[in-house]
Each structure stands twice: as C-alpha cells, then as structure tokens.
Amino acid sequence: MNLFRSEEHAKNWSLYDPVSEDAIMLLADWALAFSGPFVRKRLEPDYLSRVQEYRSKLFLTLKELGRTGPFWQPR
Image 1 (cartoon, one colour):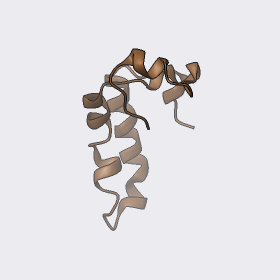
Image 2 (image 1 turned 135 degrees about the horizontal axis):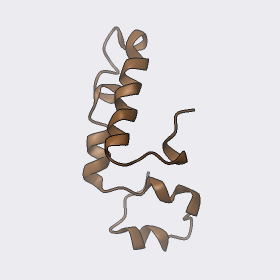
Image 3 (image 1 turned 180 degrees about the vertical axis):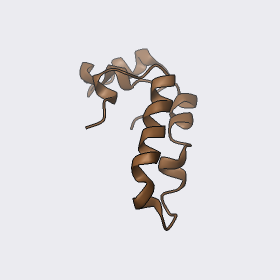
C-alpha cells in the first residue's frame, strides 16, 4: 500500500494502474476497515476457527464504505 497526498497524486505516480482505482481511499477509511476483528484478533488462540466470521465483518465494513467493486470482491 502506498500513501499519497491526494487521489491526483496517486494517479500521477509512475507505477499507477487504473485497475486499482477503486482501492484509492481516505486514510480514515483504511483505518476503519482494518481496525476490525480481522486484524485486531489475529493473535487470539481461536483466530483460525473464527476467521470466516472476521472476514465477513471486514467485507461488511468495506460495503458500508461503498467499496463493492470487483477490486473488493472476496476471492
């Protein structure tokens, strides 16, 4: 992940790929998306047994942020 000053700055980057345009988000949105249990609880002893639940919550948060395009679809 690269952090830029603005969307325009990211798009002017020499390695910019238009396919990744949907991944350009505000830092606050990235923080919200990755502050959930998918990341916070990864050191818990039951993490692997609950990872699907945590993953679902991550994708729900992304959906609430309007991130529903193909870039964000679970594989």
